[in-house]
Image 1 (cartoon, rainbow, N blue to C red):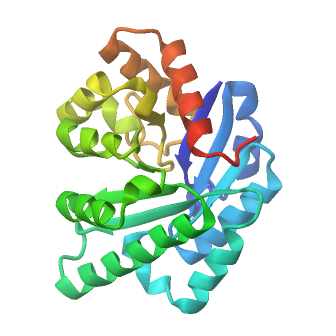
Image 2 (image 1 turned 90 degrees about the horizontal axis):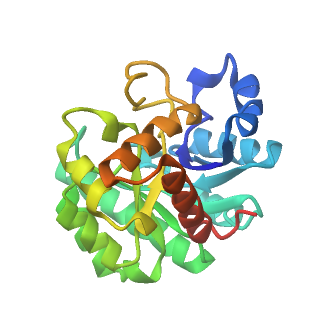
Length: 258
């Protein structure tokens, strides 16, 4: 059975068949799903999904590109919501300098990243961290607030093996999804091949980033075997071992999952 550590089934692209798709997951080998909030509306829908399906858990958080959703009232709501039994993490949070390189926006992202990291610390929850075009700032911020005290995963990892090892030294997991199957994903393939398997989580980020041979189509957790197979081939081990070890890794990180 596979543990899906990062999905967005709240996304409108699942509106036409969400219930049918989710109801088929367990019989097709997907044991557990963590659905991850990225904006306020999506986080609210994530809570509803976690309450509706036994095998779905939620993460509450605001993505750096959506920090306009954040204020003290929303932060307080997130704090209260994070205490619900089916909320297993704070995320996705972090830094994204790809779309907006304005210094004021970057400062605001860093501020709310720190606040949400502190929320996780206060509530005893792990974090799901997004970092895009912000490698140095993300690492410095996590180190600066003693991130080793806050367990978590660097989602959709896209940096070097050396940086992955820096996070692993702090106890973090590395989330690997469909990009590892792309021919030009040399850095990620190196990470998948050389990082300790005990520090890797499987994820899709669906509906985004479908693996080969489904690239360009809507992604779902049913594509995770392609990811596990690629990691297995890179490491010279069985797909079953990848699925089993990453499942235990995820259960170790997301302690609320039963």
